[in-house]
Length: 320
Image 1 (cartoon, rainbow, N blue to C red):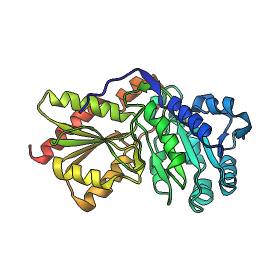
Image 2: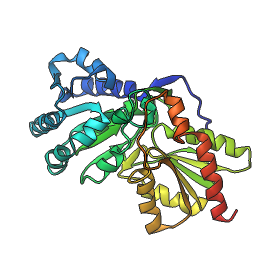
Image 3: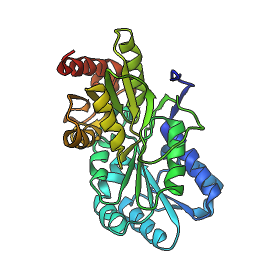
Image 4: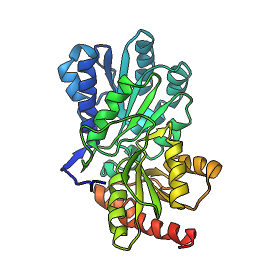
């Protein structure tokens, strides 16, 4: 398979904004809703192009969800975006009842995901949003790995999905390494690197770190399969079961709390269908803190080095 190369760092929020603009050009029913912030979550492109289809409701996130529900019931496709700690956590009741209970086609953008937000600190670092959103009936949960994939995730959420969708993305510029022409299918895992010694199951920014870990492990003679799980729900069960059968050990990697996130979702599938050793890389029951993004990634263990350590441990548990 191809070896992925960073074409240059780009924030996933930029990809989200580009995708929203393209979706709005293609479909006149797309309406964007902001909560006092636009540029910082990538919605400014749409707002500038279609001011008559952009509504800013101020710092009233719960109201934004209610308005989005009304628009969806009227035949529109609302896209509501703000920081993930607000769009996923502050609005939980409204998302559950107004959107999920009615199975309404509303796309929710959750920005500032993970500790890579940096200086904004723990209050603005969404580390629990996957756990909250994936337990909601009818909700699709998407976590793109880079800006190019974030763009396609928005377009796909508008064109291919029919119920509520949550897309989490980051603020800081990160490696942009996937093809702008890639096929994006919600619920379908993306094979990034082939290998049968173990499988690294990653999502979001950690997909790049997983690839770097796989490249380093090759030097030790360990051939790791890398799967990018850009859709946490519905998760690609066949791909995960196949990885367990063919590799015999797994490592999950996510910029999120270990409880309730990607690792939990993978464990639910594997424990039921084909139990194998699993090691987990993620936030271990802590809040983040303020600091430079890369320093926080290192401090809290969101790096290729941590994935390599977990991979060696999984291999040892496999009996190799």
